[in-house]
Length: 253
Image 1 (tube, rainbow, N blue to C red):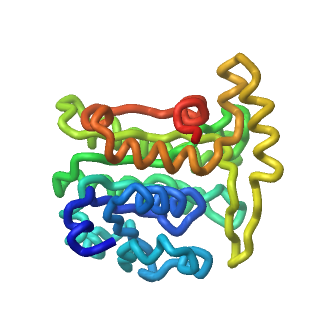
Image 2 (image 1 turned 45 degrees about the horizontal axis):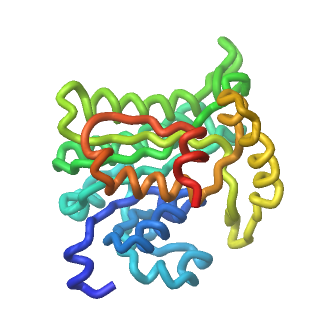
């Protein structure tokens, strides 16, 4: 994209843009002609992203989501901020680390965006099945569900503080269930879609929303929804949740 085209395009800042879902959002935004800044710890994308042509049209900014001073100046010119940051509740992580990885790493950039007057916020959350221990709920005295707590922190901030009662800004929280696509781990491609796509087709065919809500969502659907929420006029003011069923039905190719 030429410098003149970049100056005329809507400006998007993305956190978590080197991850599975975040990188799909960045790619979709570039495809639609947005000027994208991606905040990463190193300021350099991993090899599997660097090898793709679209990555050359992204401004890769070294920064830390929990340290606003590392990205505040660049965020001041953004039209929308997308946070797609999260960690799984692995046994190696403490409860506090899981809460921070799913809550604070999304809330801190969102709070900074509000302070700077950014008009739009998009948060990639999660649809959490209520029956999964350690993720949806904890057991008093044994463990706490830091994953659900962190995701709720991000949602609550978007609704109650970023938008609030005045509704001068727009915030959308996406809540996909399992996300299908090709994930990369240590440079190796993991084609999750091979197993998840057939399951998704079966569950989506069931005419019961509670069952369809459990269907894995293609990563492209999440990406299209995120870019729509960041750019389309109908999301400009107020708070909205886009659940898994809507992601499947409204954002398919």
